[in-house]
Length: 461
Image (tube, rainbow, N blue to C red; front, side, top):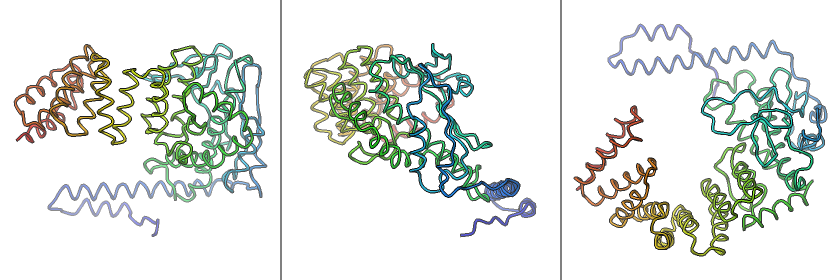
């Protein structure tokens, strides 16, 4: 199919001068024509820019021509991925991926960290060793706010240092993980370079297209991480990778691969199945939280449950179940562990098992609200409306001052009452729900919610 766009501004003038019986149809045609004209202008601008730009010089093996510089390394400034690692990964990338790439610079990158925006939740701090703005991932280990960048003018990549003292406990234990993360950033920026320098020729991939270029870059970077970076790290540093996975096995209660914990998109089944998380953000941050809690001496059972919840949240049910079962082997009657296990089972449609486990949790801890909330969700999935109503009422009564949980409890009660045909009671709870402070904050959505609940109440027999 041709990529050419033959519409002109004259076509738009003709459309404006025509009479249409349906004004909405005319407006839709006008919007579509304007969209095509904008795309045409974008293609022309990109083609003109390409003609005025000197062509990239491509070597027979372009990866060998890329300059790799490590700058400012010290007892605090570290590059877990050495220039040798960077070169080896670049050589293993698909042919043409590094065409025109000038250099990869390993540097501290203080100037690239910027300032945190209002509303950001991360606890940004200045590290005590260099003063760079960043995030403390482990006790004494700091990573910048921005981890890497690609400069389109100079065709160069910057990879930013990890900052920690030379006397970090068991540094060899964590270095393969840090190295993996740094090499992920490298291939992500190479994907940016390839997208900018090689894929956008003559407007075939335009920047005005929704989701471009970051969606392409994320998927391409994830594929290269999976197919190039992971095999390289496992091949070059097998003992270090095994030592880290053994540490995780001892602390988490189950064996989790370094690939799964790094949060790469689209892993094979033996590494935990495909991930729904972005490759640059996924499970790696949750694993760092778990490791921090362990290193600070927090209660191991609680740290395990937090990691299991994070794995459950991204649909790693097998790994999450194994961690919870490890906790239950030590504490068979632990209500939080039982409640979480029931939640995991319910998400896998094992509703009968989930109901039995949730009921046990409520019997052991009648005042533990999350157990009643889990039981409510399980009974909802089973469409057992009478017991669900009782469980939702109990869960709501235990919410106390937690507004969000109370709002959810009221919604669950309304659903159960509607299914039971008790319209009058459901309508009273709807009125109570809209008087709730949390619901009152969202004025723009109130009418939409009212319409939804009115439709729900109409379903009462």
